[in-house]
Amino acid sequence: MSVRILALVGSLRSGSHNRQLAEAAVKLAPEGIEVEIYDGLADVPFYNEDIDVEGGVPEAALRLREAGERADAFLLFSPEYNGTIPAVLKNAIDWYSRPMGSGAFVGKPVAVVGTAYGQYGGVWAQDEARKAIRIAGGTVLEDVKLSIPSSVIRFAETHPLDDDEVTVKLAAALKQVAAAAGQAAAA
Image 1 (cartoon, rainbow, N blue to C red):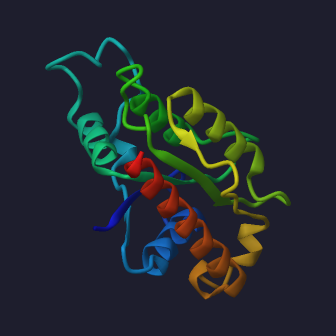
Image 2 (cartoon, helix red, strand yellow):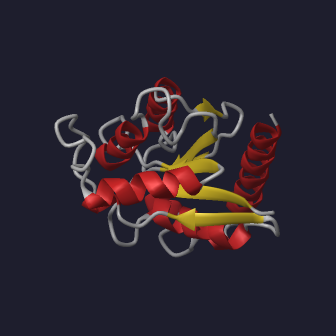
Image 3 (cartoon, rainbow, N blue to C red):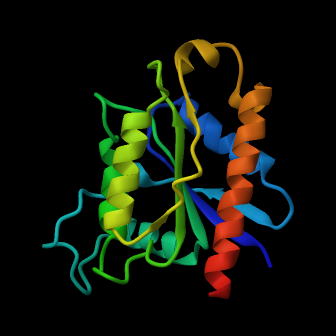
């Protein structure tokens, strides 16, 4: 049985280095691990309890929740916008936080990785994402970290899949997430 990891990418930009990093994760996933990149975060309305009611949840939010419910684990790819988490990723976390106590993150391992233009590779945004995920009920994998600095320079002419250091670290992160998902399922 495969471990299903749902990847959420916090950048909507075409040519996003975080999207490329997620694409690399799909290709690097070993046998027994399936990584699915969720497409559609741009369509999900901002979380609002007034629309999160039975029979009224927007279709895009329902699709997001359903994808999360099918996942065994999550891998979030976060750039850093103005020193923090991108709104589209925070919005997905907000939708996954409900219903309170039984949202899509509850009981599932979640890791946050990414790349950013700055010299620290987006660690502030990744730390903020981990905090929000923890509050939303996810089991944050604190030891799974990958913050790749200077993305605009490092990936100017190369895809993350062609960077040996990145592929080794990303493959290790995938194995850690899958192992945590296996432990969670056995518990």
